[in-house]
Structures are given as structure tokens and as C-alpha cells.
Image (cartoon, rainbow, N blue to C red; front, side, top):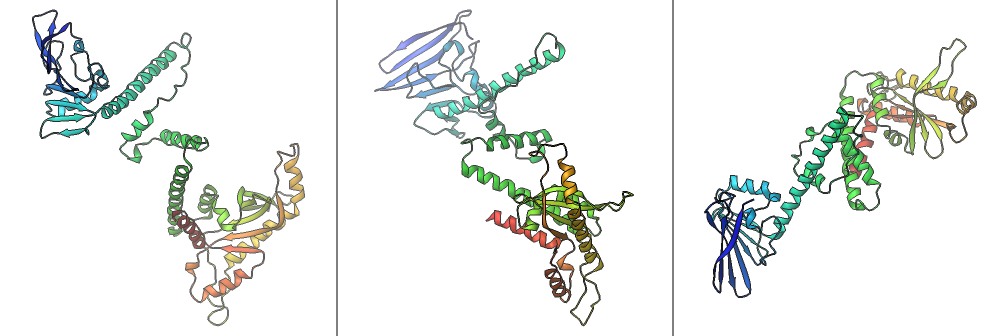
Length: 427
């Protein structure tokens, strides 16, 4: 801050001139002019530093049009003791234009747009622009102060836990999230796992706050997320289909992760009750226990279904025709899987009441597991329709459509269901 005094050195009908005299030297500088034209006032400030030199590299004048003497906009100084020019709140902006441009005049008025007139070395600003600049920098400054205070409190607590209390979590600083997002380069790999978790948690919380997000905005955001999720699921699914050799375990892991697919297979609201569930059948020597790949449950009726998973390489029909050129037997792998899942259901139903009693033992009725088996469905997911020849396909369709107790789905049919769901969301 400069030490001295500003005095009026000239006063005419249309112009007033002011100089600033430094107290500790004989230096006097032109500091301000006020030009009056009718009812309008134009103020011209000549910014200077505490030594009396020009405050900026090239900027010589700040011209204010249409502002009262004591009512300049935010972000600029009206005090000669501070040398006029930009206030500390806009120091970053001032340093930026001072370093990168050769403006000689800053012209501030409310009846103009903010323009970088580089050719004429003039910068035009209005009050709204100055207010937005100050608001942005104020948010960052406040955030920095809070972060510095928090860092100090954490350091003191870690060093002297017997003296200092554990710091409380800071409240949110309005505008800081917008500043962070606006300055982000849109490169997704910049996010850490903690960042991703924080974003998910924030969206989950805000989704359930009434009125925080507009319904159309929330719906659109959910559509985008659903589409991305389906796209990634489909990409992974296709990668598995391309594998030349693959065990059942990888398909089981994939379906366990994306258990919503079960509703597409059974065309009813189902949940994954248990993966690799024991369904009974053990002998006295503890052998021959039956394990089903997935035990599914209708979320409305509690009825259980059995899903047996093979691989996309499972052969559906024998290669050699049984009669003529269009009668093909189902493959041994397919019929074996059918008997396997029927055997699982049979054992489960035989031991149903014993299993219910065991699962409810010692538990309140409202906590005991509930499931029913009303002629439970048996489903097999195996093979590819595309692997069948034109002669084999009719035989396969005749066989599976006449299978009363076992439903057969292929992996490419399931892929088509997922694609169909994605197309529906896109529309």
C-alpha cells in the first residue's frame, strides 16, 4: 500500500485532474481524471505501484464509463492508496493479461460486451464479467484456505494426538465442484479408484434427494449409464464367445456378475437366490451330492428355477443324421445336461421340506429364507444356433419345443436379447 495523499490539481467544468504525492519522497504521479459530459461521467485511473512506477507492464489506463464516483464494479480498486487497477481478488487474471497481452487500456462499461481487442491493444470488460471472474477466484481461494486449514489440523493431530482433536469433515464449498469439472481435461484415465467410488456414491445420494435433480435430467443420466453398462457387458460377452476353448466356470462367473441377465432368460422377474447351490441327493457316505449352477427365484412368487450352464462350444446335434438328410438326434452333451438338471430338481423336491426346516431352525419367521417349488422350471444355456447346419436346425427346434420340462437357450440367443435391450434403451 502506498503512503501519501491524492489531491485535486485541476478543476474545470468538464474535467477534474488528481495527482498522488508520496509521503516519503518528492515523487508525484498522475493518478486520476474525471471527465463530465452532460449527465454522464467517465473516470480514468492511471495505476501505479508503491514506488510511483506504472503498476503493469503495458496497461496505462483504466477507463470507467457510466459508474458513479464511489460505485465502481467489483474486482477493481477505487483507492489511490492501493494504486488503483485490479484488486487482489483478480490478481491471477491481472498477471495473466499483463504477461501474455500488450493492452494499453482497460475499458469497463455495462453497455458493452467483454472483448479482447488485441489489434487495438484494448480490453473491454463489463460488470458481469468482473463479477464472474471474482466469483471463480473467490471459490478457489476459499477452497485453498479450507484445505490448508485442514492439512494443518490433520498434521497437528497426527503429531500431537493427546493435545489436538481429530479434525471434523469439512462442509462443501459452493462452486468448487463446478470449477473442478470445468477445468477437467475429459481424460477418463486421470480418475483413481477412489475418485470413481466418490462419483458413484455422490450420484447414488443425489438420485434419492427429492427435487435436487430434475426428473428429465435424472432419467437422461440413468439412460446414459445404462447404455454404457450394457455396451461394456455386451463387449465382454462377445469376447467370451470368441474363445475357442473355455470351461463352464468363466461363463458362470460372468453370469454371476451380471445376474440381471437371468430375467432375460426366464422372461420373468427373478433374482439369483444362490450360485452353485446344493440341492440334495447325498448318500450316507456323503457322496453324490447334487449342485446346480444357479438357483433362481421368482421375486414375486418365490418359486425356484434351476439353471444349468454349459459352454458356447457345446454340440447341440449329432453330426451324422439319424434318418434321411433332415432327422438329427440331439447330442449326448445336450441330453446329458437335460437329465442332469431334471435330476437336480427331483432331488431338491424330495428334500424340500427337510431343507426348509433346516434353513428356518433357530431363526424368526421374518428372517428365515423363503422359497417354493411349484413344478419348478429347468433351464439349460448351451451351444450356438449359428453352429447348426440348415438341415440340423429344424430337428433341433422340433426337439427343444417338444421338451416339456426343460427349456433350452443358446448363447447367441441370449446375446440377441441383450442387443435388443440395448436397442430399446437407445430408442
